[in-house]
Length: 145
Image 1 (cartoon, rainbow, N blue to C red):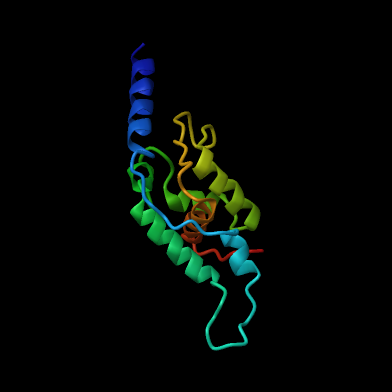
Image 2 (image 1 turned 180 degrees about the vertical axis):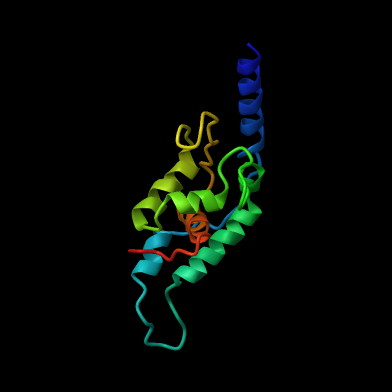
């Protein structure tokens, strides 16, 4: 009975702390991961495409401004896994960026334990992809496709 109480209490904490803070973010069109993939050298002096480095830096800023650190540390598990653990588990591919961005948006449970991750439907998909790109870069891996 105590275990059930502790689990319910932990789940309540997660739901109360994750997703509670809403940040206004600029909604961008397109797929952030595709933006760097299709980047070609610009013929003019002003670059028109963002590089993967730019997108990762934007993702870091978005993560830092979000409520993510309530449940995730960089090197350590808080409620959910540490970012570097996620980066180690998943290869830095377009498919994994899209899949993990969807998990950020709709939430989920089971991959890292019984406590569910709260959905973050207010985050634009392009921003979620940038955030995931930042997390997947933390093990030093570069995008593969």
